[in-house]
Image (cartoon, rainbow, N blue to C red):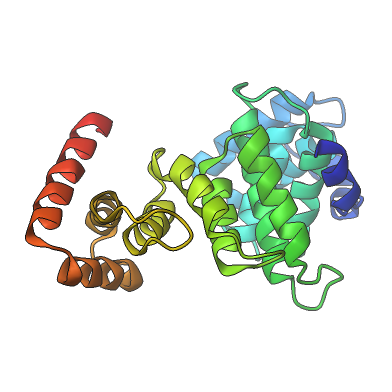
Length: 263
């Protein structure tokens, strides 16, 4: 699977960061600055509100291959956080990071940043980036999510993979696989996975129907998001309206018990 992923990732040079060292001539950083020191400088600048200075320092460290710098700068570009939003630059950074650290041992300090980079790449291939060579490729998105979901155990990747299986995106529709991946993410607290798993179990779509557990997960998800995600609220309300009184009472009790054990 890892070899397959390496074959499908688009690896590009970080030309946008060439010459980054020159930007530090007037400051405390220089061409001789160690990447870890530049990272620290960048993070300190970010925390102090100097996001332009942070981007310069992080760009220096990223150009030297520091994965945390690549991730943080990638997030800044992806979110337009203090700098002009540029999804393609974010894509480049996440690609560089993922390609260099795909085999990092899960559970290590950097692994959560690496897995998040894979999730971001999956999103870019799921939607594409307008006016670039990164086109929508649902099959590739599914492969990338599957790698982060299985190798790193990333709950967001597991949830997104579950939805792709449920909707038949990037391959055959498979509600059973959707339920499998949604269960892993749901039990880690991913709200979207909880809603999907609840729906699949309540309706018995591709899996044996379990209305009480389905309503439990739907209730947990609804209580977490409130009215912020209307579709989750509507899905839970519909399930409540057709459930029996005993199913509703049992599901609510299970939801309360689940919350008491996870908080």
